Length: 516
Ligand code: GLU
Image (cartoon, rainbow, N blue to C red; front, side, top):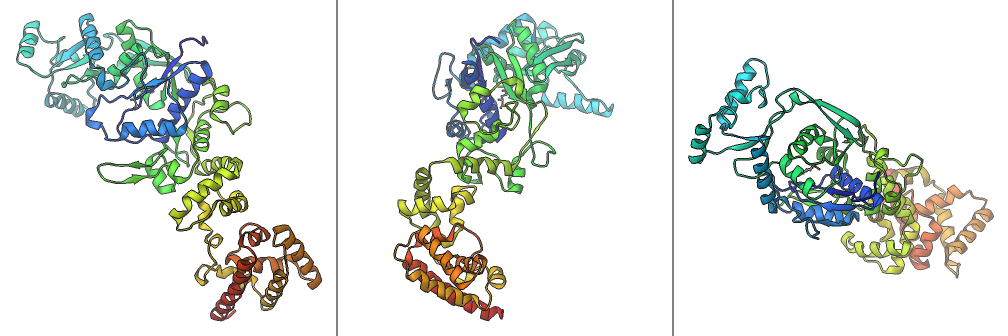
């Protein structure tokens, strides 16, 4: 493939927040542009005013930015092919419609909504579906069925009309080569005479999309599979204009975790995972939908996860930075079948990036988010906590679930099952002796504590499990966590000793209450 003049666009409609499927479309466009030395363009398709949602455009721009998908041209940043928002490009669409009308490739239709409904009902009564096309347009009210006097009269009276595309009069196979699916062949008879311009003079998606792709010199249209049924009409439109069509690549759907159908917002709500890149606040209802960013995902992990939903490098590699992905990316490694989304895999990607992040950076973020969780920690404490905990969490914020890191466990937070199972009658005396031993340690460092602890066990002929787990319970109230030697160092000698004392008292009272 020639590497020259590759231009791709991401063309969302600002009708709501961007679904993660939309972000993946943007990502694949971005990567294809980077892989081929082309340009990545953002075009806002806002011709459908009835579906316009306030805030959606800003949301799209912010989401792309968070994902690191830098634009070469587009709404907000400019370029030689602007404006990049369809509501600002009416002139081009008007001219295009005039051109088609002149060539006889489109026509005006004056049918009212009531008349069209009657035709639909009539067809239904015959168990048929009404389609405005070569077979039926003669029975409707339009340029092709009415005399020129009648048309003049309607126009003079200001009768509303739409402009429809004239699909071929005779059946033919419309063929397009999809870069992912290969040859797609469809009979023109299944296509209807689509409205290109509405009664309000605004273009429909089909017209504006083709006109813009042509004038913006788009070389490849990479978009979701849901647009595949429209592609044959688009091919015919290019032909009607006498323009070369771009190449098409229709991306597979992102499927629900169970694999049955397209992933929706409802699946996210039910499964407790976000389907939007960043949080979305509906301006009208005030409802908030969760975003990956706010959930605690790093953009690198989110983007990497999306990359692998429908594409693979042909080998075992799974971890890709944007740059690495751009080097490896090609359209022919995109899969044809739907890609099943896995919340667990998404979390796995976040862990992957979290474990590799410099601890200093994580500590800084941790200290910053701490007040939100009702705690205050300095940068040294944050660094120690990160070192102890980072292998045990999927998201940085998960650390705050271990409350015992920040305050002694209370009776309410003690793991009763652990106490019942692991705290024997003789355990308290071991822990009391352990406390005495710890009191004697001058240099209260993890490795020193560990050495002394082992010597203590040996001298008392005790097993690790007999003392280490109760030691953990006394300090944290729970049965799992980081190395207790590191944790004791983090707490410092004084706090460690006072936590043991308090832990002993709490366990004693729990045991009394539980009568175990
Ligand atoms: N505006 C369409 C959308 O919202 C763009 C489809 C296309 O890329 O052609 O998805």
